[in-house]
Image 1 (cartoon, rainbow, N blue to C red):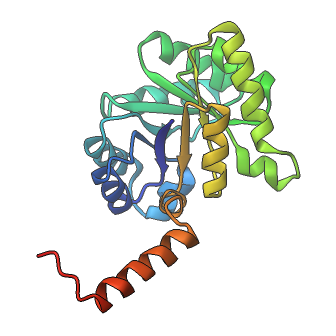
Image 2: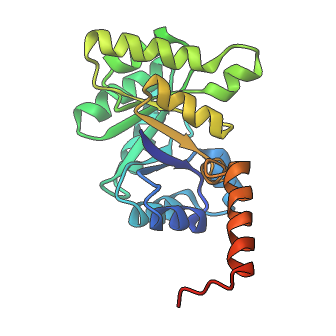
Length: 217
C-alpha cells in the first residue's frame, strides 16, 4: 500500500520523505489555509520535494471555472494530480483532464455508486472518506471493501485512495482490505510505530546494558 501524506506542512513532508514513507501528498483548501501560504507556491514546493503525485484541489464548483482552475494547477509541475469534487461538474472536468493526460483525484466519495462513476470518468484516484463516515455511525471500511470488490470485478484502473484517515488502525484496516493508497496526517503515520511492548522491551534492554556496562564502540 502506498502512503500519501495529507498535509501542506513542508517540514513534515520532508521528514517522512527522508524515511521513505512518502509516495505522494494530498492537500486541500483547509490544509492550505492552515499553512498560511499561497496554494500555488506551496504546491510547487511540495512537488519539488516528492516524486509521486501531489493532489492540488480546485476551489470552484461550476464546470467552466473548475476546468480553468484544474488546467492551471496542472501546469505547476508534472506530478500534480488535480483534485475535484464528486459532482457532475467534477466528473466532467475529470474526463477532460484525464483524456489530456493529467492525473485526477476525485474526492468526497461516500458511496460505491459514486466510485463507479469516478472510475467511468477516468479518475486516477478515488478518495472515499473513512473517518467522516465513522462520524455518522457508518463503518467507513465497508465502503473501501465494496469499492475494492467492484473495481476488481471490472478491472477498473482507478486506484482506491483511503482518505479521512484518523488512526493507525485505519491504516491497518485499509491495508488488509486492499486499498491501493492511504493518505494520512503525519501524526497518524508516526503513530503506526508505537506499541507498548516495544517501548517496555527497549527500556529493559537499556537498563540491562547499563548494568552490564556494555559498550559497542
